[in-house]
Length: 443
Image 1: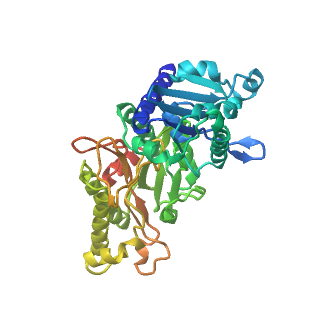
Image 2 (image 1 turned 90 degrees about the horizontal axis):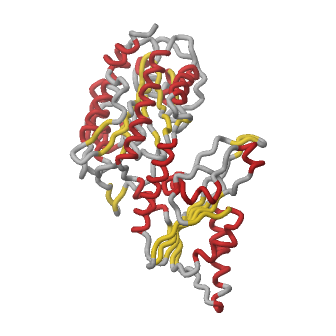
Image 3 (image 1 turned 30 degrees about the vertical axis):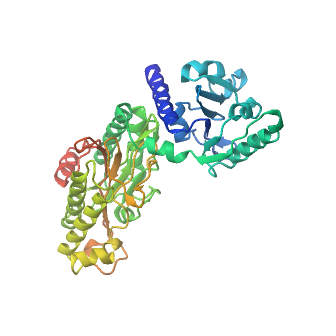
């Protein structure tokens, strides 16, 4: 655990050094820690640090502020955090404190958070530009305004207030888009844990159980593997519930003859996995289920195969649209010319979302999808999901009854490499044959 913590802080230092190169001289970048969120009355949700703050500090306590100060004479990193407090530590856990934070976080200075308003004007004095998440945090907006006004009021005493304010997010988010070897290692760990969890859920599925029983299997594998939390609310959708894209009630029974769509991944050391598999409760796909499943699988495999440096981000999506539309026409769920159906968006009755998103510290990770007014090309170090699906609404009277209520999605996490790609989540069975073989081993 100590080695993991030291690596976390070393990674954050590396990220800060990279960010300093992007900041203009005589500037300061400010980041505020996440706040505790109330669950009910006087209880809080488990604390989760703001992703950008974590990326640049590795620090996981609330009530903290990070300042990165760039001057021609050199750079300085200053943290404001909670002071040591024995009474508070008895109730809520050990605090790092400013003294220990300097060495642990590899920073220059640390001060009690209570001294923030007193010390920050002096730290930003002389900065021409302030970078921060403008408009994203009302409390920080107010404080920055207060600090700047304090300096403006003292200009005749030689104070120099910043005159330019710029969003920090685009700089940090562009950095977060590219994962280094240490980050990929964490994402692979998250993927491996999540893969075992999906297999565990498949093996547990039985007629008469409830969706939440499978959610419990996922949680068991996550937590017992050192990933205390899912990266997002787990989707366990049986039968027609699979046609609800972000279904999270997870409280309906499993029935033989139905499919179960599970979209779930753990968060390991702040890095997310995101996997979807769809499988039959009985362990055997019906003819109609298999026909639709094979279309989705074909679309996903072709899309993944296309991912490599230089390919536009939307190309895999376009591939999935084409393959799914062709398949639906072949089965008779859509009728007409494939090109015209695509141009008219007819496929959206069955496939209404994009084929993927960036993945990293956030499950829908930071980073632009465009370069200028065009889709950006893939580059080595990016991680994306590929997750096509077909969802036949139970209310769709345009298709035969045998198709209605079938929802299928298949999702994997894909790392872009120098020469192509690597699927991080390959350990979960994906073909109908592989899924049926795994489920045949149920006790």
